[in-house]
Length: 435
Length: 99
Image (cartoon, rainbow over all chains, first blue to last red; front, side, top):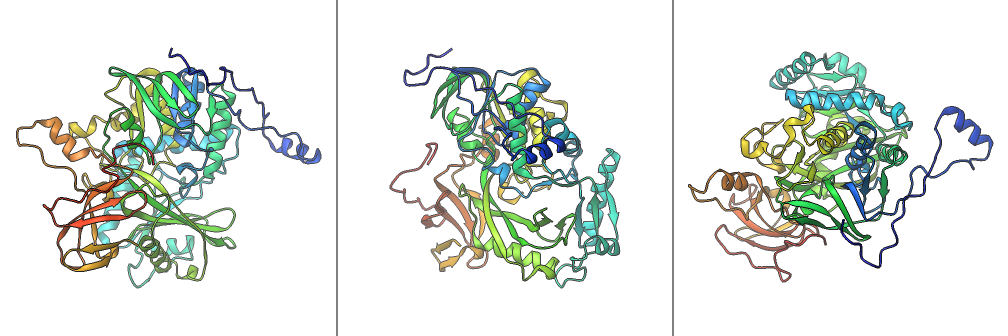
């Protein structure tokens, strides 16, 4: 155990917090009592001098990893360190879509595992994350694309995952907003994954944080990691803005900035950081009750329960750590939106923001050990990290607890690159800006 | 919107260009071995700061350019032809972590 600097406060455990059990009855009773009975959902922990596991990054994957470590693998001596407040990183910046409609069998299995965990998540966490399986519809626009999507749907069905082909008429009946005969890329049909949908993203961070905290994990906000300590080829802990913390295992769950954190340990990752923008329109009456993706450009849209259309497009296309985004892509996304759904042309965009993505060299995530003993990386999520939070957390917890890869995430190790076993869903090659 | 000063065409909008990635990697010797080639193909420094990168002026002269650009502010410090040595930014190449 490293000795702590003198200026640090004495080690204390987090004040235990019981927010009770959430339920409809509780909501009613608290309402009658003037809403005075609610307490903090998770404890504001003060970091101790050492833990068995330090998880860097209090986003979806970090919190889920901590929660599953405590509840599935019996490891409760865990701290999650978050640089800012919970929920303001990528877990709160995505377009909230969940689905498992992939092509590579390894990917289908992994994301289906995640979808199944989403299906039971709210009951398990006792937290309303507004999991809504409203369906995810992929439109196709050419004969070749129909063949490709058919092959993908067949692969999904062979693996026991739901996928349905829709004709033009069925697409129109499901999504009246879509202009089937739009001038650029007329819609020939679509593939629907009925179990796909959306989840309220910040509730995912809060729900996992509350459940992890109740299970004995310390969740520490406003604590930035400034260095990773090592002894030879083994990590021994981290330096933070709130002092030194020793650890047997350090897990990086900081997608967007994985390269920066890995460099603190002297590692270079197969990752570039890119900005992905998202947009929300003003709120309107219900017009869209399914997630729709355009097949002739990069565009995906759903309607939030508040009424805004939530949509996004491709990454800006050049390395960036700026959490904003530039106008050329905003214009491209707007043009695509209006091509597909001319009816929304007069909607105003209420908010626009950017998040920094770990774009990996094969477009697939990384859940892996590293050449350094005790250092685990969960990152490289490209656009797809949100839907993978439950499975990512479970597989990372498995790797930390057992030292071996989770069977459904064994293809996500860093060694796949040198070994030539990349998982390239789109067949692009080692060009992260093109995935 | 980035404005890139093409040495042949003058200052143009980023929409005329196509990004072609990190330009700081150089191909290892033929006998350098698997690890060196794997690192060349897959590993990237991915700095949060100044970055040397390729841009193809696809909507103009169709030449490849080398650009020194900041990945946080997006400021462009230098644009040159392949083979030209980039001018070093005043604060140097960043390999430091953080802002």
